[in-house]
Image (cartoon, rainbow, N blue to C red):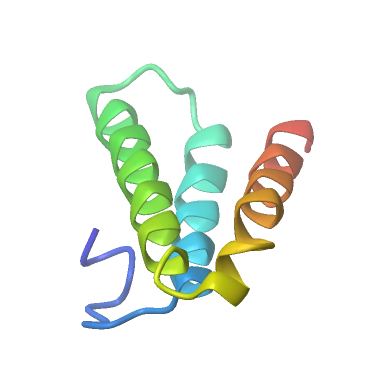
Length: 79
């Protein structure tokens, strides 16, 4: 996760979401049949969980963030 976040010690929910999007995009563009891909997918899952945890600290962010995150991730799958 640290690599995906560029060693940022306190990223925002959006920054974590963007890292998850980049990694998921890389996975979707690969053959998706390697051990590395499985580890990358686990990292995407951890990043998404972390993004939601960070968003949960701010009620104004949490109100919109989950729907925005799902929309952005689902768009990657459609590409």
